[in-house]
Amino acid sequence: KVIAYEDKDKALVEEKQRYLRDKGIESIILTLKEKTVKDKNENVLYRLQAGAYKLKETAMEKVKKLVNLGFEKAFILEE
Image (cartoon, rainbow, N blue to C red):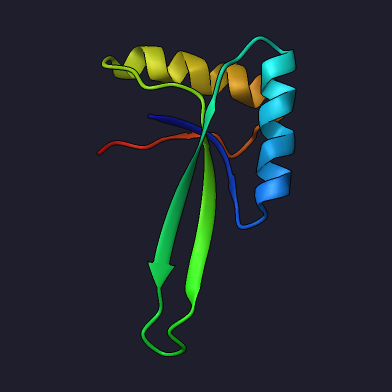
């Protein structure tokens, strides 16, 4: 998976998604929830996924494209 952006602010992630859409790049927002034992609150992180690829080379090409569009922290998430 290629992650273009991640943040705790959903509105900001949605704004980044609109920007990518305007540039012709489709993406989806993933929601990660983590409960902390201490305060029993739920931490939420929103990730903007801009593709999923079988070949690492193809994923790297997408990361480079995202970096050129200003997404300096784009990365490949291997699961």
